[in-house]
Image 1 (tube, rainbow, N blue to C red):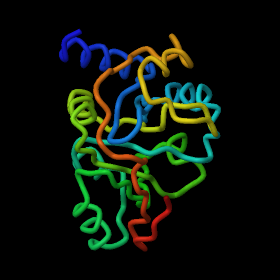
Image 2 (image 1 turned 120 degrees about the vertical axis):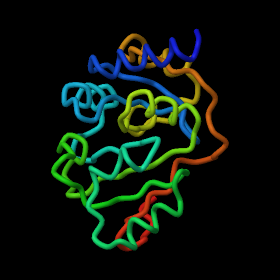
Image 3 (image 1 turned 180 degrees about the horizontal axis):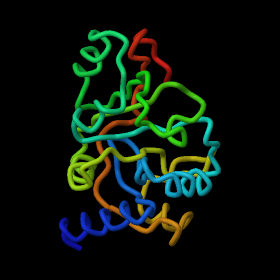
Length: 184
């Protein structure tokens, strides 16, 4: 399947509220349209993950993130920008544009601007950030191939965006943008 066909399939899936499996810097992720409640709740149900935990959003450019965050200080955003695009997730106070089904029980949102080629292509084509959660059931090992993801989730995932994983060995570092404290 050509790249343009894969991107078209991902866009149709995203627009219709379906779920997408895709590679990130270190693991395969499951994602969907963060602004479609039905899609996010379907993803959370599939993963057996509580909505209160919140989710990470991944983007191809800071423009996709800016409407969603309210940095307390200019230095907070500057700190994140020094690590983006890259393998760093930052937690910021959220704006009213962030749905509660994405932020969970928090007044914050976790966001990352990726440099992984597949993520950049997807988010650019979707013109949107994408929910990014590891491809696994809650508290189970992460699935590291499209074959393994298909074996576990089958046709509950409508689009399998098969491309190579990045070279990182573990999930992104998560930091609080206000305190620089490492959360994970």
